[in-house]
Length: 427
Image 1 (cartoon, rainbow, N blue to C red):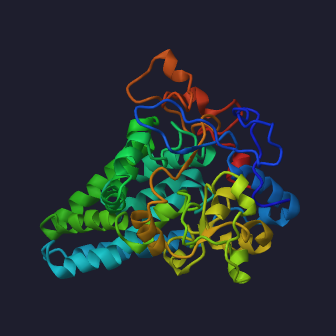
Image 2 (cartoon, rainbow, N blue to C red; image 1 turned 180 degrees about the horizontal axis):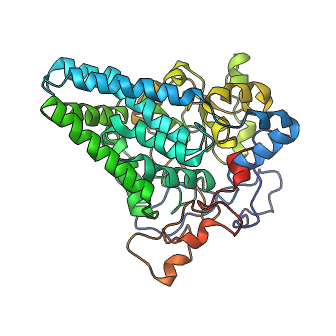
């Protein structure tokens, strides 16, 4: 089975392509919905590709299911990185925020460490550090400490919904809105987005839907405020907390590791200069053929990156592999790739996250409109409602119509309390 085959979902809109021209590949693109601004996203009726590829890989290589399960090493890496950040914050307690030593440390060490912790929390959100769900929540709260602001508890339901509802507008909060894309689709706009993208990822979800506030959120908030206060009292000022906050901002700004935010799901198939050739093409030293066999399919929704920065980021670059098997931890993703290489090597991939940021800003053929969207499919994980709307209308979610969703969309009975089937958490 091909690694790039996508099947239409029985719940999704039927194709609008005309059948009269049998020689022309059937288009998977559908008309954009009505919006306040002209919509240039790639709207499709096809199912997201990861579910069908996961099924095909398990059929071809059933041994991959043995790769699933917690990774004990994760907790020790988290302990080491948190300790390093707290040490740096303490050592800089008497250094001005404008001092070059403070700024360089925050960019080189702080931003890299906090990006690592962002992705540790990402890994832990899939219950991949411990078998106990509660132990994973506690480790995520601990990993959150050097970030400066409480976010781990809120991140998990949004992220798991991103997996269950990839590309579904109103559910996948990783998607930019049409208004964002309209105002940011320029050199200055894209530069602004790349510089402040951490703020977009932090604020956007709150305007899409709001998950229930749980005791884990309260614990996350209490631990973070208590630690920030205790550290400030110990050091006689807020410099350590400012170091944490600056490190977090830089981690999601113009930093090499921040390239993964854009590299994961923005499609670069319109870039004329190449740069996203598949591993198969790179091994054969071939230029991408025009026309290409993949041109009749929707643009790639997910790109992987196999470069050295994966060492610092829990192998988040292996993003196709991660979305195909979210129950496989970071230490075993390369093994998955090795076992199922015939599925992954034909897929386009990035060779450099720095190149991704550079090209995203300067190339007019890629930008915030370069996302695949679908009107229906998926479901919310953990429950939630449209922001500020508890009406019955909001309980009937329609991806095209906007953002009205509810806990009723979390899935049928028999699933785990967070709307995520146990069979989908552990292989």
